[in-house]
Amino acid sequence: MALPVARRSDLRQKLRPFLLMLAPVASIVLHIKVPLFSDYFSFLDPPLLVTVYFALLHRDAVQALFIGCAIGLAQDALSSNPIGQFGIVKTLVGYIAASASQHLNVENMVARMGFAFVFYLFHQALYAALGASLLGQQVSLNPAEAILFAIMNAAVAAPLFQLLDRL
Image 1: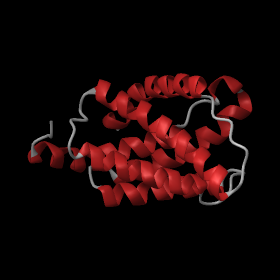
Image 2: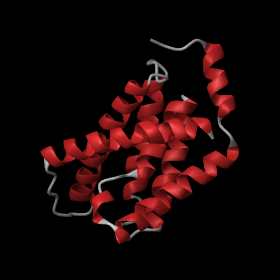
Image 3: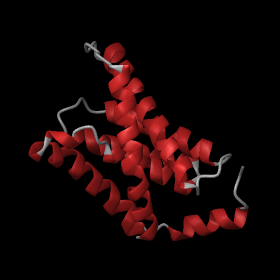
């Protein structure tokens, strides 16, 4: 069920420019630094959750494409991964999430958690496929572990999305 046009414009006006810069940077720093202190949170992918959040909020596939690309490339540049691998994956996640949000109601927190769950699985599968096909990496994708981590990321997405909505 699509939202009325007036409600969509309210959501877009709500997005502040500082949030567009601060949230991705903070999510990338968290993604890199938190596993250094504790392995318990290594399953979290804050840059992915922020990409999904902005894609759902903007509802514009082209903007979400650029946001996903910027977040992914910044994540590649600040990590030991090959440049472009996260960039490609997060670009596709942003584009598909924004395209889907044009046709679905994304105001419901359960729907947002569902998006986070699905796009975590999509992200992991595409990341593994790119690594295997383009870089010749050995891929060991455990489906049960991926589903468990997707559930945990979806659980973290709910309070994160509420926090970002309030900023």
